[in-house]
Image 1 (cartoon, rainbow, N blue to C red):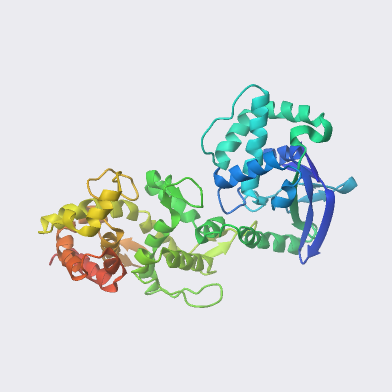
Image 2 (image 1 turned 90 degrees about the vertical axis):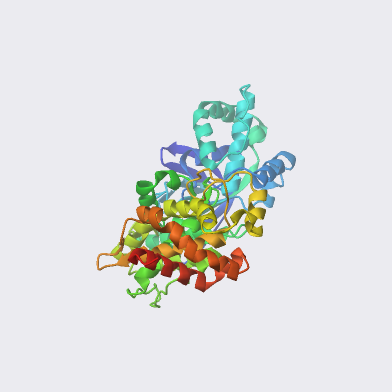
Length: 467
């Protein structure tokens, strides 16, 4: 299969050793492409449609070593690259022109590591041919594309020179490529069905590294509202969140998603919402916010998939949030990272102020001996003492007592940060005894439903002025 650049958003594909299958609304064309013709694919297409982000590492190193050591066998050792486009035109001599209509769901669906490794391989050879060196260090797909654009003229000269060599020179080896297109591009229903199936195909093709639930949720647009709210409320934290695997952020998306259930549970106590199968969506157990973030994430996806919560965009499989109650819960979630960090930072001080010896607790001592850098989980502020999450999460969940649900949505009864500054010391004093009852075991505390009930009661008493 050969590809050449046609114009800004199109690639022409010509198959070597082609094969074709059609099932339902999808046609798959398979073949081999000499690597020099992948230059146009890298120019035009991107990994936006792939649920995971990609970076260099052992996988890309192994791919490049395989290319260097056994080029003839390489096309039989790799799955290659999977492309998809809803817009296409069949041309003469077995060629197909594709121009993906929506980069969010079309383009390179699978084979991101292959695309990154091959792209860096081409770029390295081109730079070496020009007497330059590829910058060292790890690279994400975005890092690579930036280098590619900066050195595109060098790549072009190298590719042109190699094309004059027998069998394409150093860029003459084959890479397997699959192309998915709608069976009938003139049939609107067929094209729509094709688009709807693309995400599930992405998920299935990532079976060598299990596709995380958060990656799939992000690709469906379930995080979009939360991203916007975080950008607005706390851009410093928002920039550090890895909304999909290898996205570069230090904060996992599921850590934030788990916190959504603090206000969301308040919504589901009074509002009946049903999933796409008509089953009622239940609140998440408070202790799951600590012990099972995967459950929190799965339930979040189920909630956001509900036709009572989101509507599907006409262009692709992404969803748009319209439920005001859910949106209000996400708005309060955007406040929680800062509040979490304040509780995290002040807990050791207030525990000691209530007669405790926090630094002598075995779990605390072991945690602080293992970690050199001591920072708060979300905002990364430098602190003196780290705390086990099992101690902190019940206190954070207690913030639910400061929330109330109205017809318009969930809101704060009082501004939460001033409340914490005034009352957290007393709340910690009420909560501290629970650590001894649970043998100071963070696991027991974090997994015990009573921990969450007690902190909520403490917050309620502080709010009522009786603590």
